[in-house]
Length: 491
Image (cartoon, rainbow, N blue to C red; front, side, top):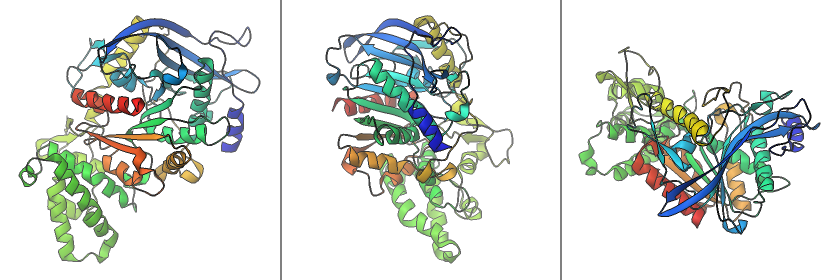
């Protein structure tokens, strides 16, 4: 199935923006506008193209449409001097509105309260943190997200999978470079969450075959490229280790740790938590029933000190604390659970003895504001005249997790694709951006993955923020994070 799909997609081409294939074929909907923004004291004027690009089958019939929004700064004379960044979110099944309206675009949502966005109206402001000063930006909604969709005889199964998704986006990127004569521009991929796994698959597609497109740098935002390091399925003890320092950071934030032992220094505390995870916790889990009682008691006590749960709870859980149990247990006595995407958030729990949280308070606290402002911006500022349903996230089902030798479902790992790309492309820089309070893609799990042989360590840069999965909803982290990305591109 995968090989036949590869052959089919290799022959795909993309239609010119305004041409229909025949009288019965739809035409891509494309909307052009202009804008300006001040970044780093510089007033930048730019053109915007928001619209569809059609993927075609071998007969030239449209089978899918990818919606994108491109911002091109005025004054381009030499493409070699102007980078272009391709930006997408994750899911899989998420549109790019989060990075578009939350981080990189020239306009952004101004969240009045990062804990609860309330109800409309919301404010859209000029984004002084945009990176349009150093790169042109192309925000991509993969098939099944936003307004991107299948057409004609196209099937969602052709696009909803690790390899299938990467093939279609690689085709789009190549055609965008051709349409805009940007083959010789420095190229960057910026992806969040599953988007980081997508980057690994895209590097394999773009650099691993013919019509090679070499990438200058990637920003892995809230990284999950090897599922082993945060998955706690039965038998996978390393997942508990990948989560543990994130649990510790969360306990610190919620006042469940004796901070005086570390003189109130979060970084020192997390350094010790990492050491404990590797040198004490992991060996204890591997010992299993061979772990003697005295050592077990010591591990239980120290783990309790780090993650803020009672020794009794940890002991009864056989030292293995799953994410959902931690979310529910940390503040159970107060009738609260903590968030998964951002563990600073809390939700009220009606069931005082429930094992799992009712939902994730760090998601329902912000999703309405992003959806409302993205669609308001598209229609009222960019003039996009589309009334179709816009799928922000969650509309994709039946994802094909098979990635060949890189694994499937629980233990997919695109790390080897990233490390190979680094070894074969000496200019490829990797920025790994992690929020300390992100329990969906824990920072220590990313560290464990990139600590493996094969990665060119002096071209891997880790940056950390006292925020969660979407670190950019915390404005101090937004400012620092965008500067970190800017520095990677400007090097």
